[in-house]
Every structure is written in structure tokens, then in C-alpha cells.
Length: 328
Image 1 (cartoon, rainbow, N blue to C red):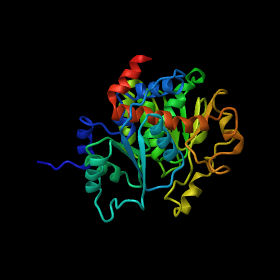
Image 2 (image 1 turned 45 degrees about the vertical axis):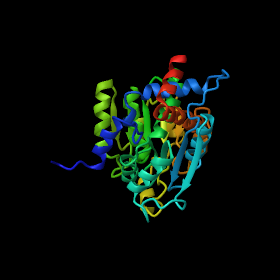
Image 3 (image 1 turned 120 degrees about the vertical axis):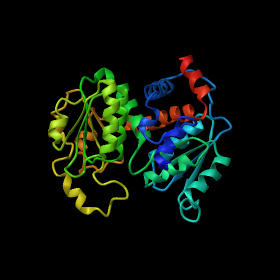
């Protein structure tokens, strides 16, 4: 009998317990996850809604974080849970203790784990060996929580949108889950990356399979002007990601990829500009664009918290998530 790899085991595990490792993991309910988050964000009723009451959510960070850490800690608190933050120096994950053993131990103490790591294989291994839900808070291949917040922000502005999403920049983890989530939600996406820095083809193939079912078009180019023309959403990210600072030559590949006024003038007049932050102003985007009336980058940052609150409730207390959904 062929030995299954970690990703195959994880897929089987997801059918029983539920994890959020890539945007595709919640493909059947992602539109509802986003709708739930939007409604909670705008709910001004005084409800005593604490679905994580009595639960402790552990968050492991191998990388420094502003939005991820604060959005998870505040969101967990709002839902009545206890947030336990574990920095890389606090535990022996993968050094003096294996990831598998750490997963077994933490599953005895916690109700859910969020993990911001370097290697995607590490969050997969943690999820495979955990008996509690695991949420990928960022890896080198995927950023599904960002994708949920991104599509939430786009859905909030759908009345202004009449075109596609245009990505300009690196074929990185953010793009991977943006393409997957766009295919799931039903919005066309075009992306432009420098030659040699295209996204992972296996992930794109998966997104295209989902897109085919939902009537979505996914287009690739190496020309930013080509993808931005007529776009309703213009999205970029840093050219060199955290952990890639040693790759100095990579920056040179992005000549002509800066999102500036000349480029966004090709987009729909009511376009929205998006960036997952932090932004390197003057590199991938100019001040004129990121500070314009079209920019929704801070709405996008806030929505990390609301989207994650929906995901946490769905995975940790589905009955409460469903009850709130039906209450609306």
C-alpha cells in the first residue's frame, strides 16, 4: 500500500475535525464565513455572544507580527476566549521537541492553535498531529486568513465593482490564497508577476478547477498594465517578503511593477486599492495611491479581525456559529 504524504493525511483529517490551512479548506462555506463576519462587524445589538467562553486559543509565532497577533488576540477576547501567545523562544517546536509531539501536547491543553511559520510543511505537520483545529496564520506558501479578510473587504465594496481583481507583484503566499478565494467567491482575477516569479502552478491548477465550477476566469501575465486595465480591484504586496531579505537580486526583477498613478489610471474609475501591509512606500506603491480615496488598506487590516472571528467560531463552536447565522 502506498504511504500517504502529510498533505493527503491532512485532507482526510479536515473531513472530520476541520482546519484552515489554505483558502481551499473552507471552500464550501467561505462565502458564508465572510457574510457572517460582515454581519457581526455591523451588528449594533447588545448581544451577550461569547462562543469561545471557557476556551483557550494558542497562537504560535515564528515571525514577528503586528496585524496577525493583535487581530487574533483582540478577536479571541471579543468572543469570550483566552488568547495564549507563544513566541518562538517560548517553546521547543521543531528543535528539542518534534512538531508532532508538540501538537499532541498542545492538543491536551488548548482548544485551537494558530500558527505563523516559515515553512508550510510545518503547519501541515502540526495540523496532522493535532486533535484540535489548526489555523494557518501565515506560511511561506499560504496566507488563508489574509484571503478571507481580502474577500470580505471586496464583498463590502461590491456595489462599486464591475470588473476583475488585478494583482501586481510577486507570485507569493498572499497571491496563492487570493486566487483560491476569488475562484471560490466567484470573482475574476488577473495577475501580473515578473518572469521567473510566477505563483506555484499546482495551486493555480487547483484554483482553476474551482474557478471552472464557478464560472470564474483566472488570467496570468508579466505585464502590469495588461492586468490593471479595467480592474475594479488593484492589489499589491511587498516585492521582497519577510525572510527573503538576503535575496537582494530579487528586487531588481520588479522594475515597472510599482503601483503608481500612471498604472491605476488604467483601472476602473471606482477601483479600490488593496495591500496586506506593511507597505514599503515608494517601492511597490506610491504615497499618492495608498493614501488616495480609493485605498481601503486600513479597512482590509481591520477585517483581519472580523474574518478570523468567524473562522474561529466556525471551527471551535460550530453550533454557536450556526445559531448566530440563523439569528440574522
